[in-house]
Structures are given as structure tokens and as C-alpha cells.
Amino acid sequence: ELRGVVALDGPSGTGKSSAARGLAALLGARYLDTGAMYRAAALAVLRAGVDPHDPVAVTGTARRALLVQSTDPANSTTRLDGVDVGAEIRGPEVTLAVSPVSATAGVRELLVAEQRRIIAEAVEQAGGIVVEGRDIGTVVAPDAPLKVYLTADAEARARRRTKQDNDSGRATTVERTLADVTRRDDYDSTRQVSPLRPAADAVELDTTPLDLAGTLDALLAMVEERG
Ligand code: C5P
Image 1: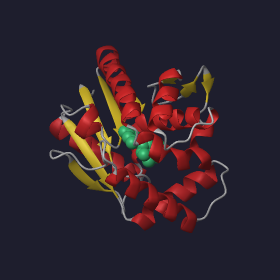
Image 2 (image 1 turned 60 degrees about the vertical axis):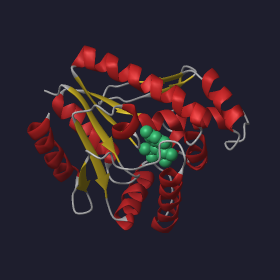
Image 3 (image 1 turned 120 degrees about the vertical axis):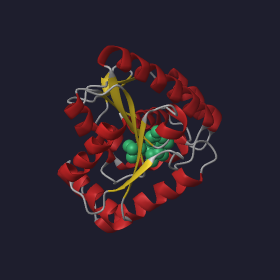
């Protein structure tokens, strides 16, 4: 059983989501997908017809949006204004708008506060939670007893993302996904607020040669050692 928080950070396509969800299920813990929250905020911005690069309008839209993120690893849903938007937030429009929206200081302030509230509630109710994102170890939960930073070759990440997209019925190619993954990583790593980087006390795990089972084995060993 897990006590407290496991912070799982890293760029996209490292197998972070599957690993975080799987680990939470194995440990009987909760699971929080913070990327889904930023994606839902980006969807709200697009629906409002607001320019994703306009911080004042973006922050206002995010404040008015009602975001509800569930923490059940078997059924992690994202609701925007009462409606399940799980499929829509994975689409290309949202994927394009999410970088500037998540780089908006006002949006981060809002969502980080909500993430901390969700984490505290989950720890109280279930004992532990696996939280995935970009800034969990550095900003959202700096006191987490276990922080893991997942990495993988850009090629491997693009291949994984493409398979995910194609499996979900979104047609794309490895070349296009590689370009998108690289663009988002550059944006996320170089932004002013909470850039993507490993916490000083994070354990790095390169998932390039690992499948999901191998990644889960490595994570379980870390939980046993540290948790
Ligand atoms: O993890 P996912 O690819 O769904 O995240 C989408 C985007 O949300 C990332 O590219 C990043 O810009 C943003 N994000 C963030 N901080 C987090 C989680 C996601 O800035 N904790």
C-alpha cells in the first residue's frame, strides 16, 4: 500500500500516463492526470473563441470554467462544465493550444491550487496518490517522498504517441507526431513559469527499452525502496 504521493514527471510519450495509472491500480491508490486538466482548460479557451496567447483572457476563461478531474485509476474522467471531454481533449486542436495555455501564470496558479486540494483529499481518503505531469516534483508536491522523472528517446516517444493516436482512431504519422512532441517539449522546457525539468531529488528512469510491464516493475521497486 502507498502512503503519500508519488510524483511522475517527464515529457510526452515516455509512457507516463499508462505507468502512473497502472502503478496507482497496483497499489490501490488514486491517480491524478494533471495534463488532462491543462487540456480541459485549453478546450475551454478554444470554445470561448479566446486567443491562447492572451494571458488575461485565458486566465479569465479558466476561472469561469468548471473543471472536474476524477482520481479513479480505472476510470479517470475529465469534465468541463458538467460534460465528459475525455476524447475531445486528446484531439489536435487542443494539443496545439495547450502549450500556450499551460504557460499562462494565472492558469497554473488556479490549477496547481486545485491539484493540491485533490491530492490532500485523496491522501486522506485512500492513503496515497500517483500524480503525473511536468511540475509535480518541482512545484505541485515538492515534499513527495518519491519523485520519478521519465525519459525516452524522441523516436521512441513519437512511436508510442502515434500508436496511441491510431489506436484511438486519430490518423497520424510518426513524422508528424515527432514534430509535435519535439515542439511541445521545447515549449514546455523553455517557458518562464514552471518549466519542465527534473526535481533535484528525482530518480530518472529511461523507458526507451522498457514496455509497460518493465516500467511498472522498475517503479514498484522504487516504491518499495523509498516509499
Ligand atoms: O501530459 P499531457 O501531454 O496530456 O500534457 C499536455 C500539456 O499540458 C503539456 O504539453 C504541458 O504543456 C501541459 N502540462 C503542464 N504541467 C503539467 C501537466 C501538463 O504544463 N503538470
